[in-house]
Amino acid sequence: MRAADLDIRKLLDIDARGGVVRFAGERAVILDAGALGTLREELVRLAGYAGARAVLTRFGVEHGARMAAAMVSRLPWDSEAELHGAGALLHTLQGFIRLAPGDTTPLASRGATLLSSYEAEQHLLHLGRADEPVCWMLAGIASGYMTRATGEAVYVIEDRCIARGDDVCHFQGRTRAAWGGALEEHLPFFRESVLDPSLREAAPPRRAMGRALDAKASALPLAAPRGEPPTPLVAESQAMQRALDRARRVAPVDSTILLTGESGAGKERVARLIHGASARAAGPFVAVNCAAITETLLESELFGHARGSFTGATHDRAGLFEAARGGTLLLDEVGEAPPGVQAKLLRALQERQVRRVGENASRPVDARILAATNRDLAADAAAGRFRRDLYYRLRVIEIHLPPLRERREDVLPLARALLAAAARRLDRPVAGFTPEAEGALERHGWPGNVRELENAVEHAVALARDGVADLEDLPDDVRGAAPAGGGGEEPAARTLEGVERRAILAALERHGGNQARAAAELGIGASTLYRKLRRYARDAG
View 1: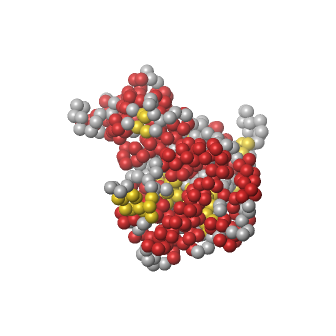
View 2: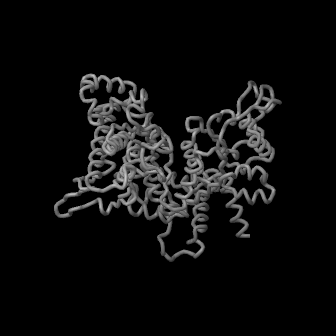
View 3: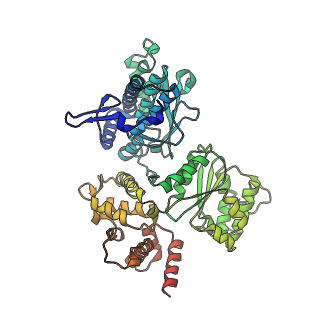
């Protein structure tokens, strides 16, 4: 038996008449993830973070150990490695996690990376952003499973977590001896006698364990500070899955990457994912919008300046290349960089050195460079609008992010994730969308991509009543999207371009022709809106 052969249809047995559900031969119950999130919130409220972590970790250990026992007794495995790898797949089938491609077990030297975690999702929804990794039950499940599968005590610890603002959750599993002193701060949350029978006599008394938990609790707030969770990266569509798969594959390699795609498609989020999955994850992530700053100021921002080099330069100042030392620098909207800055960018990339404005000496830089643009840089380079040599220097690896209208499968899952984040941020008890609202979300053309969707969802959450976002709570242009096959419109209005054009013109009308406000509502850049309006005028003429 191989791990890849596991099939939920063979593992799950439901007796509808008797009301009995069995998974891998063991009686199971189906629980709503939101209810488990509420349980977590209550545990934190009643027992503090340390108490909640201990309860959920120990519960997870028991669940994981029982699941491994069922696997050992019921199925003939080809090898121990297949049994080990089955654990993560089992918990994917149960809806707990989504594992990164190629990862199988936290015992691997690189550990195991989760692209999504129900536990991190629910923590963000109910308690806000955390200061520490919070997939406590999942760490317990992995510990219990691997301990039972290997026959020796294994402790699985999470060191990166989506709920903390990281792009992925990451787990590493080792024996107590292999962890060494790094395990000490985590031991109070495990029942060691369950993982390692040899520790039964040496286990600290309950009172001492309580003091250890109390000490840990005193260092943590009762609730995590309410930060704004990052926009989730949803990839149900094949096009987006391919883009994210490429991003994760190149993340460990220190190559320059060019991210392309329309405004609002999620280029900065993917850049952050690459940074978080790279060897530079512990370093800073620095982003600069090359379109938002004048040429003189942009040069100073990027490369720094010496005191007295221009009016107002009252002191020496390091640029963003230097500020990103050991980390990642994102050159957003790099296609808008002026020609003079392009030349200096090329030199910095070639020589890995920068020269501050007003200085003669060069300084070494150690930052990975990512660039993003919504322009067709190949066409701009061919037309002489962008330096061809800089284009090739930036485009060592190119990752194109498809617009939201080309990945319709992602619209509703992404909208639901954004709704959960907005409900938490706005402190509004909104649990979901009505079918009518979801239908309108699916039909809309989304010219502003994910940014427009995020604005529309926040609009709906702000106006929602009775705990659900209805059709009338959506913005006018989204609500007015025609049902498929409605038949009353001109053919051009039913095309994606026609839907986009109507949305833009409607936003302009609502704002009395103010392009800046219309662009902000649509979630697109003012330069993007200007180009589209210019094209509409040219087509009409």
